[in-house]
Image (cartoon, rainbow, N blue to C red):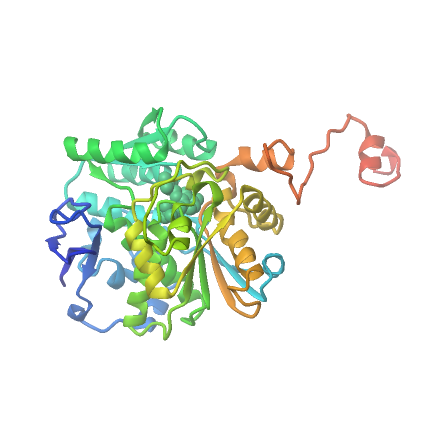
Length: 433
Ligand code: F0G
């Protein structure tokens, strides 16, 4: 079974044994390209369905269950896994009503072992690091990539090195990086600058880079689409909606969907909608400008996970939009936090960036891009516990420039039965309890 690295611009190929993140000829992004024709048997959805509920590695992972599409030539013993994936697909009528559609499914990637979709890309990325004999791995991160990499590096006995901004990193994520024993560098620089720094440091010091510019990350993240479509009995929805930051998921989804179509697993491509925060919207601006002149932005948003102004996977995301007749939308911090409160309020919950999927769906329905009768599948990228400060700030009405529309106010009460009963709107005496 042959796989190779291939430049998305000039099609130059390289062996997968190279630790390479850009084409040496033209600087273009690299794909991992598999020759599916070399597989012993054609791809068949029934094989993937039979593996559901597998108890043993590697098929107990929601990534490696699809290994023929993810890394066909893999030696199973090389795999570094935390049984990632296998996340739930929720059908949520109340959230659908908020967004203005009849049918809304939310795929909760926050249910991964470290609480975000990154685990799907990290199992493939760290596995590749092991295959290449790497002892050190590194990433720049707004928090989730670093939490995930720290965990998988620890599992594999590698040193994880994480480049974090020293402002606005969500506490849950920071705690994970530290707890999992990574070398944590808090740098006085934003994510985009940290990304430049980690690329430089990795290249000069021979450290394996595990940001989503590493094409093996995206091979794992494709499985979000495989698993979601499997949960929909291989029937494609009309829309897939995903938040866009560094644009790894957007890129992976396009590739995965196309591969599914080519393998005959689905019979049509859904349309992709990528949602950015208004204050971190370089792809949105580029889309509106007809993809003529790209300009990075200085990012600012409460959704710190996607506070990114110069996404590394830009060209792959544009390719995904072309393949799927996709669209890009922007949403305000207010819309993000209100959508999050609605998702939280049905008992599911997510971190702020994830709520872009629902806020974006609502806006696209209001603009008439998504029809009320369309089937919509949104991806929730991170767990509600990742960013407790944003959640509490919202409900305490302490967020600047934001007025919570769905507030669950905390009530301060004296140590008194009467007071508690009065607040609960009831009468009674302690004796009756
Ligand atoms: N949602 C969450 C919760 C994220 O952590 C990220 C990215 C995104 C969405 C955006 O995904 O980059 O594939 O477009 N977080 C990265 C990190 C950048 O460092 O954790 P993308």
